[in-house]
Image (cartoon, rainbow, N blue to C red; front, side, top):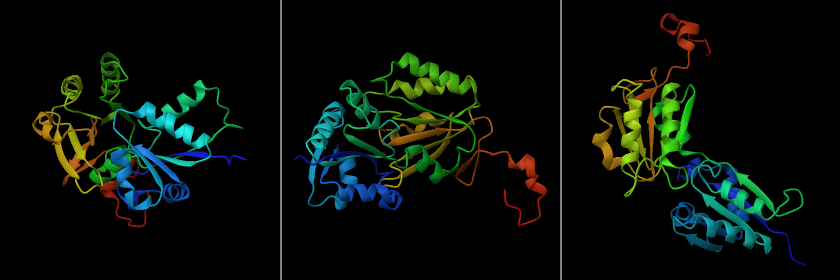
Length: 266
């Protein structure tokens, strides 16, 4: 009798074990098979000794998805590891798309569970202050799956709406003009002094942080890459001692400047 397998889609967070959820560590320990992009597998190397491990290159997402599903259907307990959160620009979507094409039934078919993680927008925001206190938009500069014309429309809409904007995949060896074009769009609606943060390798040994503004963003192209996240403030965002702050609105509500009661909780 074939034992039932299971597929976990695991978010391992920004790359430091202190920021990985307890559940993520638990299911990786429970799994007998680990699958993932090589860089992400390396983030959990010390947790997967003695397990069967399948490492993939960056552009093999479809192959990864099919192998995970096949292994789980054969009775394996599989963890597909993903940095950040697997449901945000991660493998969760591709797994569910692949399963849906095979008429998979979640109620009585292969067991699949997403283990949420800490996405780049969470980890990077925590490093630089409180930039996401009000509404924000998240846009990837990768036009491999979304036409650049559509991405431009999304940037324009976010700029018009005065959203703080979080940019994933801001640049690569082939992706050069995208962030430049985005900056030009934003400057139609925002001041050149609008705060910008570039966080590279958040919570990893290679972590670097640059605080700049829209005008000077092009001067820091060497800090842009696939593991970089760019956070661009809105009309209310300001910097204070290398922190980016977006007012939540309490200042006007509680009159913080004149507040002298230390016991007030806001």
